[in-house]
Each structure stands twice: as C-alpha cells, then as structure tokens.
Amino acid sequence: MKYTLSILRIGMGWIFFWAFLDKLLGLGFATETAKSWLSGNSPTTGFLKFATHGPFKPFFESLAGSTIVDWLFMIGLFGIGLSLILGIGMRIAAYSGSLLLFLMWLALLPPENNPILDDHIIYILVLMVLDRSDAGEYFGFGKSWKKTSLVKKYPLLR
Image (cartoon, rainbow, N blue to C red):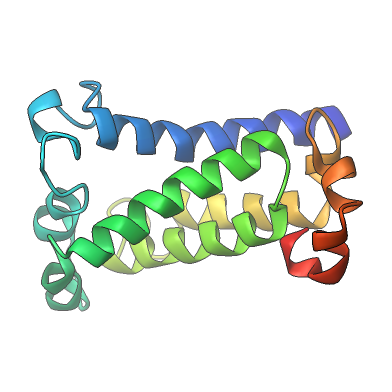
C-alpha cells in the first residue's frame, strides 16, 4: 500500500507541477507559447474570464488578470507540486492544494457532468488521504524532513 500511495503522491504532484510549467513556459498543451506567463500573459485570465459559470461567476471573473491572484496561483502550483513530488511539507501541500481545487470547483459550480462530484472533489479527497497516510515517507524525503528542528517546532510543515 505504501508504494501505491507514493506513486499516487508523485502523480498528484506532477499534475500540479506540470500545470505550473505549462502556464509558465507555454509548452503548447493547455497554454500556447504566446500565452505563457513568461510572454507577459496572465496565467489565470483564460480560466477565470471564460471558463467560469454558475452563481460565483461574477466574483471569479473580477479576479481575472489580477497580479496578486496570478502570483498566488503560480506559487501555489509550484509549491504544491514540488512538495508532493519530494514528499515534504505534505500537510501544507494537502491543505493548500485542497483550497485551490475547492475554489476551482466553486468557479465551475455546478459541474458539467455531475451536479455535485467532479475531479476537483476527488483530488481533494486524494490529497487528504496522502496527508493522513504519511505518503511522503516512501520514495520521498518525508522521513528526514520530519526530523528537522523546523518541522519539530512547527508541525504544520510536516
């Protein structure tokens, strides 16, 4: 089971980290090169302005193109992805990743294919399982990270 959870952790980390890389560099998958963050474009505008729907649409549209929202989003993708891949800071990665996914779920409320449940909610559940199972300790640096004085002083960083 620990190996399965490790693979799941690394896979979830790669999902977040890949989104960061694609939006930063415009690798041509979800983001074209000309629309990359490095080309001066907002990594959040497309989704917030054109993909949102439902009761919270006006709120999320108002955030589109905001420099602080762009930075928070990109730092979040990078940090969550790297933490999950390395197996360190699992608690913070799980909670911040869950918050990001929940906000994305709200922006798409109601989901297209199911009135309640979609991949964002499933990913939140996966992150909670990864946090509770100490998945960072296998094929990752979680064991040694847990022993550092910083993490002993601030267990939230575990």
